[in-house]
Length: 304
Image (tube, rainbow, N blue to C red; front, side, top):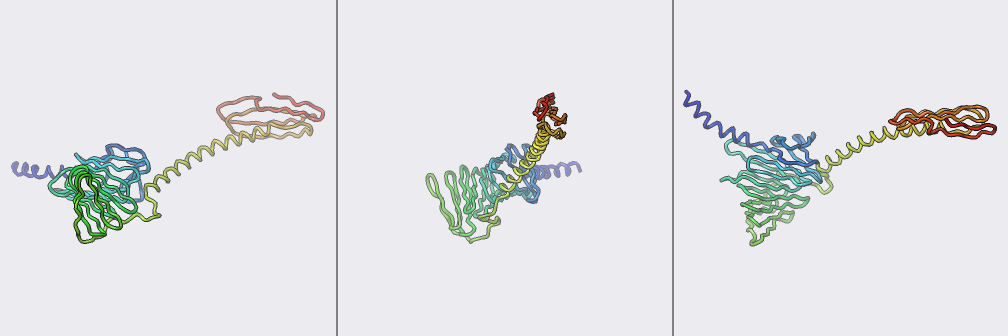
């Protein structure tokens, strides 16, 4: 019985290790980095966070984030939208769906291909390598630093194995390749349909939308705070207006306001009418600073 238990643990431990290694963890991040499960609720990412399987990450114009998983790491550059999904226990495979932006990837080397990057124009399949994928509104490209990446163009039905120092670019007219020493060969394969839809010409990315929304929220909050301060200042100024009067008719007027400072002043005219302006509130209280004197027809104004 005890022997059977240890045999069970022997086979179970590798499975648990693989299952626990599915999650991507945030190693480094800047501001303007969010993730979502349903594309409706977006949450800011912070260093140390675990990215849920299948989550989509979006970076803003100044956003960057580094994800790590064991010896693997992926860096999302600014204005990038990509989702990460891993499935399988004994032989897990990872699919990265990149709609726009740039990724820098370092993938663990294995005997079989286990990581795929899907874009609107091409798919990149790797066994283990260091490479870069960039996606624009009309094309996508793959550049390899180390290892070998199989790049497939969906629409044109072309495929190429891209090695170190080589690159492949796929647009609406097909695939083109380049290399520092030699170009990789291009083979014909059956055309297929991309899993990722193209970004429409006038369609804003969720990166920009979220960035603007946050800026709008911040501006609204700042505006409300400023409005409150200005209201107090305006009211205080109104109170000051009550302090300024000219004697002669002897009629009394008063103005009340709340502001950063307050002042009390009296002015009397020829007929003995008093005019007083009161300002209340603020951090500083001054008495008599805002009092103004006026000369009536038969009397003199006094400043208190």
